[in-house]
Image (cartoon, rainbow, N blue to C red; front, side, top):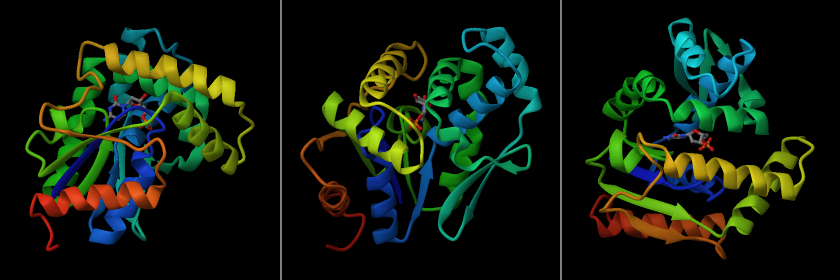
Amino acid sequence: MQIAIDGPSGAGKSSVAKAVAARLGIVYVDTGALYRTVGYYVRSRGVSRTDTDGIVACLPQISIEVRYENGAQHVYLNGEDLGDRIREPEISMYASAVSAIPAVRAFLLDTQRDIAAKNSVIMDGRDIGTVILPHADVKIFMTASDEARAERRTLELKAKGMDVRFEDVLREMRERDDNDRNREVAPAVAADDAVLLDNSGMTVEESADAVLALVREKGCVPS
Ligand code: DC
């Protein structure tokens, strides 16, 4: 089974996808973590996020491995699990910048498709329904108002102990969405056959129920 969830940052994709994965007993794949890992490496080398050649030159030095430990995804960068270090706001901006470079997207393509070839998955990202899994059984484009998304992101980062302000999160989120939506390669747009789900006023459980209802409608699991 392949379920693709795309949409902008803070739409609740990862919380909802995790809940659905647990209910269906399938693997949740967070593809943003891969771009964040590349962004983390690039920044650690002191390369600017606008230096496309410098970023591309980093790729041969990067080895990324995705492992599932107790049901949770861990991404290893050259053998090291970076944990929440890839969640820092500055790394979000790097991830968005590197993700606009075709060579970076090509570099991460097989890793994503290999996981989906070996497991039933619910995968979240920006181009899952359009590029990575164009034949996914169910495609959802999940979104919410800017304010609702920034509010969720702020709470999430604060819960991780980061000192962030709503206004900064909102501004950076809009900048990142703009980059992700308007880039030339694999822009973050809904696939033609995706179902739109605006979950502004919904809880994670309600959004997960909406996704599960679609999965059942497509005949993927018994109703
Ligand atoms: O989902 P996220 O916020 O962790 O993703 C971080 C950045 O990575 C996001 O700004 C755009 C990029 N990304 C992408 O281009 N394609 C994906 N499938 C996932 C993330």
